[in-house]
Amino acid sequence: MEQEREKNYLYDVVIVGGGPAGLSAAIYMARARYRVLLMEKEKIGGQITITSEIVNYPGVERTSGKELTHSMKEQAQAFGAEFVMAEVLDMDLDQDIKVLHTTAGEYKALGVVLATGANPRKLGFKGEKEFQGRGVAYCATCDGEFFTGMEVFVIGGGFAAVEEGIFLTRYARKVTLVVRGDDFTCARTVADQVKKEDKIEVKFNTEILEAGGEHMVSYARFRNNRTGEEWTHEAGENGGFGIFVFAGYVPNTAWISGKLVCDEQGYLVTDSSQKTSAEGVYGAGDVCIKNLRQVVTAVSDGAVAATSLEKHVSSIHEKLGIPALEQGEADTKRLEGEMTGGGRTLGEGSRGDGARGEDTRGEDIRAEDGNGFLSAQIRQQLSGLFPKFQEKAVITAELDDSPLAGEMSGFLGELEGLTDRIICKREYISREEKERREAGGELFPAFRLGRQDGREGNILFHGVPGGHEFNSFIVALYNMAGPGQPLDEGLRQRLSSISKDINVKVMVSLSCTMCPEVVMAAQRAASLSGHVTAEMVDLMHYPDLKKKYNIMSVPCMVINGSQVYFGKKSLEEVTGLLEGN
Image 1: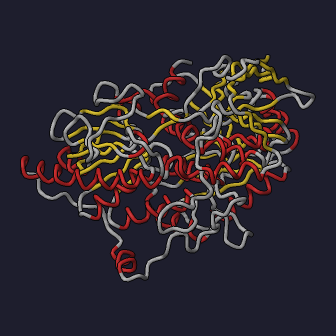
Image 2: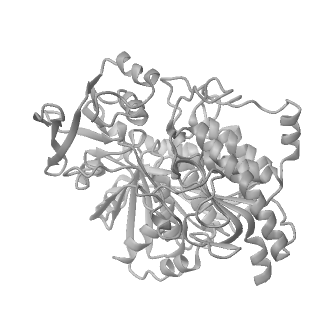
Image 3: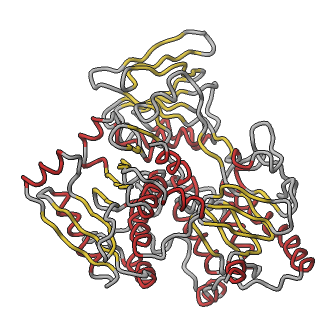
């Protein structure tokens, strides 16, 4: 049994990171008939998925980041690449067979490609940390709607700052771009778009010094770098304003400190073949030192790393006498279509052309005619997943008389007709019962997820799980019904050992790209410990909670009604917070 598991968890190459660089490496390695596993801890596609318009990718006139990376994933899968949602916690890289310790267990590989990208940089100005989530934000897609009708300051002069600043004009009454230098650092064609926006003002040679207030940001101090003049912006009668920070990125390499050579900024040092300081370990994309950080260069890095790594992997096979590993199943029909010109072209059949002004940032699960919740494509994907459930999952809809309850009942109606592996129930809550239970801290309406034998029921969704949270909902059902997602044994034991009752509410917006990781982490904890209750709350429908906790950014995690945490959190981080209660 142990030998069989070792065989199943041994790959020619493990790629860490699911952005364009990682996907490119997966395509090249899988096409060369190697056994390839791509690990991604959040969402396949990386940060490019929030870019609504890409017009400079050679050969593709116009697309969105989401469409481009979705097509790349399909291509990699067609060649036989495998995918798993997991976070790498540690790596042993000294031996010929590398060992990766992840939240989904232990994996081994003959070669590794690190394509972990970079994370938004925090500037460190006074008040930045204290007011994160209460006026200071880092994701326009996630948090823009919280600043509807308010004034917003966008800190930064690069591509992200300009694009997100333009996006924020959908919500804010005025957007001020605060640029440290005397000009934008992005392409002129991008910067010129600012001139077309009446709501945008630009202040060059300016930096933020401080954000302050009582419970929310109510004032901010700025300084002109040329004149030294300082000025203060104070909140008006509207009661607040926003500060969105887009001041570059820091490489996601802190977790590999000491294992590989990095420069002073933390970027991986690689040679011309993308090889790092360790044999058999290659880097690709924004995690590496490079002059140009664009999707096209990330794709190039992935291809170079993969083709260079082929030689190393082959030599390890020969050195250790390892026979060819069985590759994941390839979609030969699809590949034949692509090779003969019959394959679907990029973006064909998609619901948007990525044109500016159209919101392509949320997951589109709705039916094509707009009259239902689940599209034909989603239904087809679910039909392949539900038969894998080991036992039946139960969804109990606790419904009041609100319009949201009607939407949730409609969603449940579509879901219950897809499979017999899910039992759907409806319980209608009277006004008196609702008031009584709300006094005890419960929220309505709700989907309560449990098992057929009546166990648990401690995973709840307050809202229709659309947008980016649809995947969280399906994963929660999978974890309830079994076999569930693979999990590191250490984390499993830590979560199973929780003996105090803990309530975790994760406040989200359905357009938030960072929320699902926190939601799934809380749900995974609840699936393993009956003492943990995990609730996803679509904050749009619960304004009282937004006001109670002064929430101006998501994800926002509230533990036991008092401890408030903003920003994305991994399962490891969530576990630590739960253990601290």
